Image 1 (cartoon, helix red, strand yellow):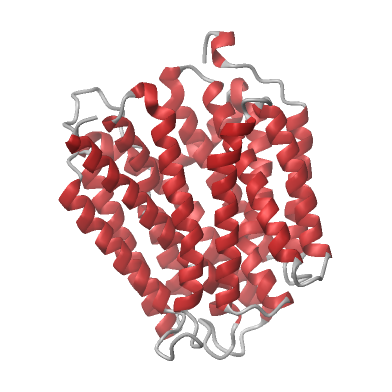
Image 2: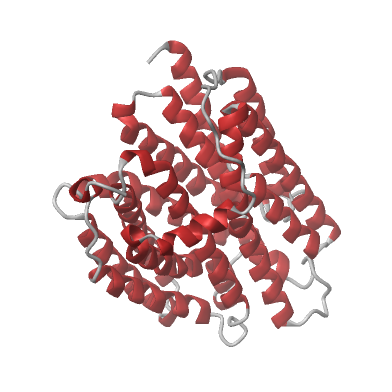
Length: 415
């Protein structure tokens, strides 16, 4: 790799790291800003049920609009270049985080939800970053450099919640409030823009025949997941698994706030442990374990352990339970997730890799959107009910995966 490409690669990896950091920063504050009556985003006399619906919509906005935005940004990057689209994406993040911060200060719940939608729509830097890395590197080392991308994102995400918890706590500084982490995320995104503009030199765009951009391509990819026989059963398994994990990761903030009365600092450290566990599962354990076990076996056992951890998480009231269970659950989820992604990749021929990765991303986004909406209308029955539903969906994913009998694309010889 040339010196120029090494500098460009580093700038992309830093972009991914800061993106993970920016996303993780908001997790400690989402539940408090809707549930707290004194400094919250909704009027003090708002009912608990309405607050929970607001919370669910705020959580659902990002993945739903990511399904729409990511494929469009990917298509545009093939036309005008990776660098321009990455800069557009980061500019969208700066604006979205600033709107979020202003919405928190002015107590405008609807505007905050809209800002999360904008962040989802423009925050397509990860898939475009993947494409940019593939442009720069040797195809034979694709797995190595994509692994680095995942590592940088996971490390950023694991650090972000701790920073978000600290920056939102008045115990740390009287100048801090719920808007501080959002302003900080906006500044990070702006710094990221400047670094990318200064150091990333995009390769020239090749002259190729491109299809017309489809605004609803993300939803069409989601439908492809269940139309194509090759990946239909796999997509059912993955969709169920992401419904389960989505419930766990998106509603733990509310769960910890209401059951254990956690502060934003405690919630921040909780999500930091979660991010660290994911990084260990994705980067360390999966590459090691797949030498000895099939990907299907890894997925089944990981989902089984994950479901058991989720049940213990909601049924045990011991104060140490959340920390032990999230550490184990996040590690095994990292193993299950990467196993599924690799099975997706192995299910099709090389010329269909872009398509199948788009399908996998759309299945993830729709699963997290659906479970957010379902849980928003069920958590008023019990604070633990959304995660209980997630645990049973994870059991279902485990059972469906047990009966999955997909073959490697090279064995089938076709898409």
